[in-house]
Structures are given as structure tokens and as C-alpha cells.
Image 1 (cartoon, rainbow, N blue to C red):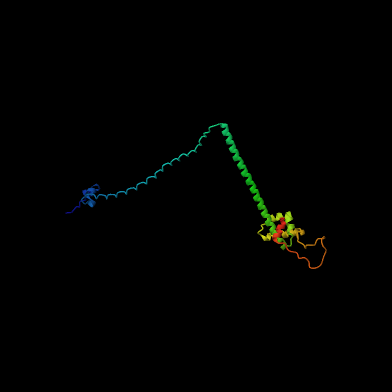
Image 2: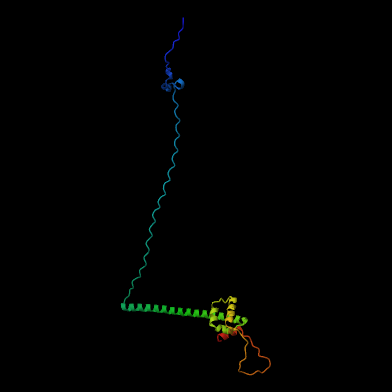
Length: 215
């Protein structure tokens, strides 16, 4: 007796293998359970409070009004108005004349001061020439009488002795008449009497200045 093998038709997946039943049956057909709840999200950090804007400064207070100048009190004049006006004019005239007098005195004083300063500068230049001329072999009086030399000397610093000496030597080179020569006796007068010659004395600085100024 032969045995026949039965071939079953198409097999169907078991009931528990349905995809839509896995949620209820669990993983791999295991019995379903309560789903694990998701972890709660951490609360967001509170936002930093916004910095309030700086308060607007109050407007500056207006400056107090300037105090008006005090008005002069009205003149309470009792009498003839023409006489009062005449007195005011005389007073104004007195002030004007006093001012003009002070101005003239100031002008005169300034002129005297300038003249004294000019004379002082002239004496300083003459003194410088009187001291340097004998040493350089120059005639001091002739140099001081020369307008060109005095103009040149006026622009020189008298404290600079080298500049003074150069002005004198330049004048000697331009005009040899400024050179000091031997003093010759005059044609008139007593004749030669022999004996020792009369010694000549060198004039001092004070004597030369006095002779120059006519004193």
C-alpha cells in the first residue's frame, strides 16, 4: 500500500504574525504591555530681563533774566532850567580842558624821555670811541664829527668791542685824515728857548668827555 504525501495549499501566516497586531501583541508576538512614556523635556531657561532704557534727562532750567541796569534817579532841579543847563556845560568844559592838559603833559614828558634816552645813547657811543680811538691810532674828535661814522656806529652794539674796533679801522682805511698824528707847535708864539721839552699830558676820559660836551 503506497503512502501519498499530501501537499497543503498556500500557507497563511498565523494570527499573531499580523503586522497590525504587533502593537497589541508586543515584540515578536510577545504579549503587549503599556508603552514607555517619553521623558519630559527640560523647561527652557527664563530669558534675561531686558535692560530698561536710560531715563531722558530733564530739560535745563532757563537762565534767570538779567537784572536790568538801575535807572538813574531823575534830577529834582528846582529853579531856572537854563541855569541848570549852563552849569552842566561848564562842568563838561572843565572836564575836557583837564583831559587836554593831561594829554599835553603826557606828550611833553614822553618827548623829554625820548630826548634823554637819545642823549644817553650818544654819550655811550662817544665814550666807546674815546676809549678805543687812542689804542687804534685814530683821532676821536674827527671820528665823532663825521656823520657817516656816527651813522655806522649807531647800528653797532657797543657791548661788542670787536665791532666797535672794526668800525674805527674801516673809517681809517676810507679816510686817512682820521688818523692821529704828532702834535706840531703853532707858528705863532715864543721861539725855541732850548732846554727840556714841555711834557704833554694825555687827557683823561673825564676831561675828554667834558671837553666834548663843552664843560
